Length: 278
Length: 278
Image 1 (spheres, rainbow over the protein chains, first blue to last red):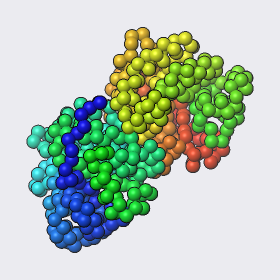
Image 2: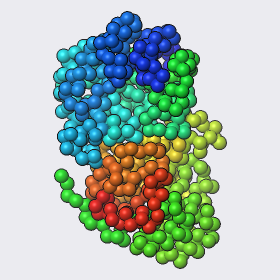
Image 3: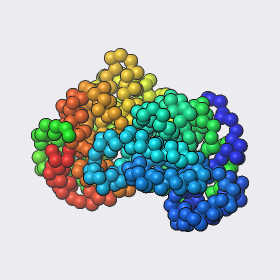
Image 4: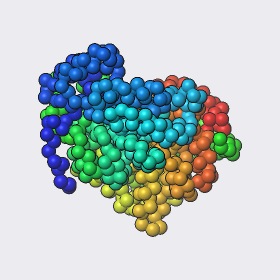
């Protein structure tokens, strides 16, 4: 019905480190990606921390890999936690730091109740202004990411692209906060084409995985592109029409399926599906 | 922060039959509700069918109960299936027939692919116009229900109140289709107050259950009001401000928690929570 998107060159593929986190540690995930000819990744802070920051930085330097982002900063975790993540992102040369709001638990120390979504949302604009100021001191851009409504209250209280756009439009002038767009989180949303156009050049990262018809877990059952219900080629066409020219990033959490395969199998299948399923 | 909603009278409480479907058959669910002093229910078609329609109709007539709705009609299942559900709703004197779109599987016979959400959504307005014409022949109003995005593609392709409102606004003039609003399906949505006002007197049914912080299943792990993250008293205030004056309907699917309790325990806890948690 619509024109196929332009063909992706392998160098436009990014595979998020977390995709191999079920089988690999920091070092081996990079080795598997590089051996598969994949140069771009997103760094997963828990894997850096398990490795030890200094050791991970040394391995990273030697790897020759490119970091499209570091994941993830939590807006509700406060300024010190954010500064730490910005320093880490800067140290590893990550192009962006992906930022979520966090959930009710992250606000608990400040006395928020576990049901007051209005209060939690009311904090976002001010905190994002502060975060943008802080990020201005680093060579890293903030990419704000709305998450799927099924993790609302747990990982995020911003659950649609429409809401994320309304928030970014309220930031003080000159505050540079972009967007990380995850097809898995947003595929159900209506009027996406118009919303993605509205996002325009604020789209800094674009993530894909597939929604499985028989999804069994709220966080760890994402599908390989092509195995589910998201029209990811249509998505890429929309994303490109909105002006995005960066890599397409595969980000799969799959405890009971793909993490039981070898990481080499995962990367091989991702490469096979590129330009066919996403 | 806001005024408490007006106190609910027990006669304004409705408990959906499916809430007791883990422990009860058609007849016993009605008996348990009536013994608890709850007169209003929503009928669950699979329970009627297990009982046999004629037998269920006889039991229903004798029960003295009031049916706020029959659940559920599936728009994508076609006109014959809808007529059957309308006849059933009419036979049981249900005030409304709750209607969802259905998912990709329901369209499969007509050749839709499992990823073409744009095509599926493109069918809705025409089919709802036809459905409204058909419903006009019965003493039943259609209540269209957007479902949670985590069942998008499976039970529905309309995943927000904003989308449902845009759809209803496109129906031909004079076509009477209202809304069933489920706090569980929509609690994550932004700008709800404005959207509920826009829904206004189209709100025909209002459903509550709670979103559990540790939700373990995409369909069958709804919480008892008060046990989760939805500010249901704020919700009732918003719903009443939008003009809704009907009963509040408790609809809990809880395979691994509440359905392991006796139905008498469930109805007792629901009554205890009324005006405290919802």
